[in-house]
Image (cartoon, rainbow, N blue to C red; front, side):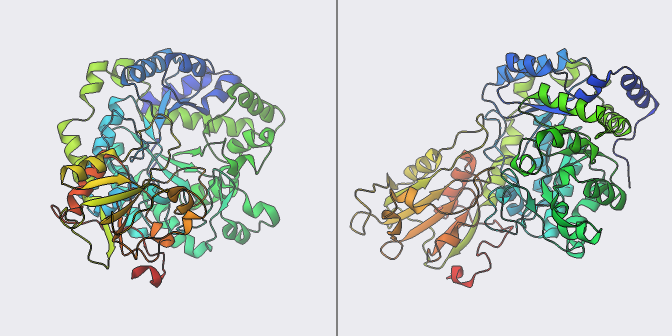
Length: 554
């Protein structure tokens, strides 16, 4: 298998020279990627004081502030600092970047050339914003329809589709100098639980795993993916076959030498960097005491320790683990050398701060270009997927459907600085075409006398910590008793998801259902065009929106 961290003589010399100059404490700090949530200089000064190997940036709303804070991160680091992000598209994005659909929306376009164009936009804008590393693509299989955290972050349920999309993404991203990270090792989406909340399980047999997730990871490794994220997910059947017994069969990959070293490195041949998933997540914190967990992450094969609620405390725990023999000197050195090699492979040892981040004007000029907006609009429109219309409701016509009552659930996002969630673009687009929309009033429910069409607008994309996907009728209808009211036999009803693709499961008798996967403004406006018949629906569902249940088809 290729070595994605292979270096020339100069790069190797930089790694060895840098490694030799590190104290034990400084070496440990290189293993940490800490998180920045505000993109402020003050926040990043505090983070930088720990001298971490990397800083992970979550979306923020002020471009000038983000650029200034990023420049400060780069300039202040004695050893070049990695800048990473979860650049997954959808509403979990910077508001000033090009609004691109999430992975499921891209997969629904069913066009690898368009997928490559989207990946190029992501790569170019990520470089403009100073990123080196994206924790993408998600290569999980969206099989468990109640899994709320995989959902729209996935390319779908089909192994071939997921692999084709992921290969395209990795190839384009890394060709533009942004490291990709395939996640979540050893594979999520079979268990319907969320590893942010508890240790989850991939229940596949070794043979079934090898034919699905194993094939995906093996091919991406052969293609040269630079990093893989080891998650808080167990693979108990593989562990059992290896002779592991009892509770340890359910050890999360993030602290499993068996999964990281034997399966990923020895059997699949991965020679790149292994980064743990966020160590603040319930899948790890509920498995091990923090004192044990911190050194265990590195001792058991991860090269990078991701996130911390208390960086100084965790670095001290790592040092304690080293002194007490729970983390060996050899393993620490191996992980630090791989981290430094990763930086050198990205050219961070040679690039100046100006190379890594331009002026505010240059950054702004690289975002939301005419070409990138065109790519985004094309993808947003082509992602819209008509799942069923057994009542022949479409296309909508303001002569027949003028009076529209709308029931909304915009959902929420885990990232405070992400794109704001609003259905205003949908309302505006419908008004422009002659429809009269009003919000649902639980005190005066709609009837055939005052409503020609009822629309449910749901906007919840895949998000950590929600637990499960479901239509919350009590919330939408204004109370538990009102949740039992259903109107679809009294008036034409349209269920429209700008998020998860499985809401039909809770509305089995709704006759018209559409998935558009994200609530970005462009997605909403493009969908309105299709609702009125101005543009055809072309989206191909990456999953089974009927959840394997014939009842939902009618």
